[in-house]
Structure formats: C-alpha cells, structure tokens
Image (cartoon, rainbow, N blue to C red; front, side, top):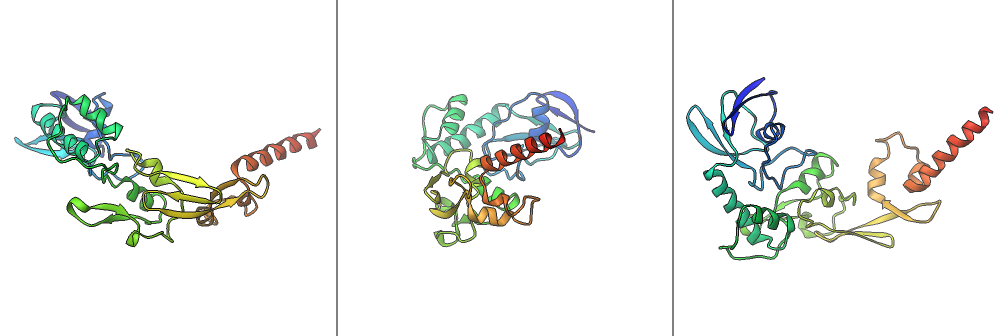
Amino acid sequence: MINLTINGKKVSVEEGLTILQAAEQMGIRIPTLCYHEAVVAYGACRVCLVEVVRKGWPKMVTACNYPVQENIEVNTNNEKVIKIRKLVVELLLARCPEVKEIKDLAEELGIKEIRFKKKNDKCILCGLCVRVCEEKMGITAIGSINRGTIRDVATPYNDNSDVCIGCGACASICPTGAIKIEDVGDIRTIDKWNTKVKLRKCETCGKYYAPVPQLDSLKGKTSVTEESFKMCMDCRRKKLENTMINAKKSKY
C-alpha cells in the first residue's frame, strides 16, 4: 500500500493507482475531458491538473497519469490549482465556445468572460480518438498533424482513408461530439475526416448493418462463423433463439 495525503487527509491506496483513481476512491472529484478508462491516460487537456508536494517541493501534474507515491501531498482544489484550472478551461472555451461539456466546466469554475480570441471548433485535441483507434482497434487510421495553433487530427493527407474500418470507436469516445457518423444507404460517412466506407447488407432482412472493412477485420479473430457475418445482429439473435427452441423441442 502507498501512504499519501490528499487535501489534508492521510490515506493508504493500492500501489499502481494514479492520483485521479485515488481521489475517486475518496469521493473527490477531479474534472477531466481527455481521460477514458478504455485507453492509456495521456494528460492532453490539462483540466485534471493538481498540485503535488514531494519532499517540500511543489509542482503541477496531471492527475490522470501521475502515479501515487509514498508520502506525497496532493492538493486538488487549492487556490493555485483552481487558478490554473480556470485558465486551462478558459483557453478551451475560447477554442470551443459552443461545446456543452466545456461550457459546463466554465460555469462550475465561475468563468464569466473569455479574454482570448474565440474560434469555432469542437475538437479539443485530446487525442482520445487517435488512441482508441490504435490501442483498441489496432488500426491507426488517424493521427495528429501540424503543430501549434494549426494542430489537428486527420487521416493521412486529409484524404479518404483506405485504412479506416468505419467502426465508429472514434466517435463513441469523443468527449465533445466533434466526430459525427451518418449512415445513408450503403455508405457510412465519418464527417470529421470525410471518410466513407461501404456497409454490408444483411442477407436475411436486407438491412445495411455494419461496415464491410470492420467485418472483414473481425474474421479469424472471433469464433463467429462465416455464415453469421452475413446477418445483422437482430437476425443472428432470432436464428439463435429458434435454434434453442428447436433443440428444446427435440428433447421431448
């Protein structure tokens, strides 16, 4: 166990936890935007900044990826932390003034005015979409491009990606709704990078149900039969239910 102090309270937590996880166990909320349990923490948004005092020396760290250490003192909401956190959220609000999650954080922190030039973006460059694509899907269809104020997330050469499998993991993990997916006919479009992939039609009901590249990438990685890949989930479920019913009937 690791002994440390959080907001003046001495606690013992399991080794390997981050400050964010330790604080959560104590019921202390540290706001985050770029943190998600599904991927490795990166500390991109800086919203979770806290103060750590180690051997008398204070420093600001991101709570989502800073491991707990013996005898450190952590301050999650003192005057210094709140001041820096307000600045970070104000900068994010200037970049994405219409994003609800950031507006809610700004209201919570009492931010009334934005002192910086406003943009009209939805992407906060947290990198969650890039990380889930690489770490969980094993695809790496998107990545960070450019630097500084023109940094962005995109496919190679900002072109329709022939690597993207259209799974939608990027959209599902995005904390600000910057990535939208639309299925029209047999085409799925991911608007952030204007990627288009073909959808497969269920051979039983005729409904378009999943991206062809995604289904192809799953073959050989699961125990699902080749025949099952030709059906949507609803038809697959009905077939399984009918099989179970028939199996019960055959017993009597």
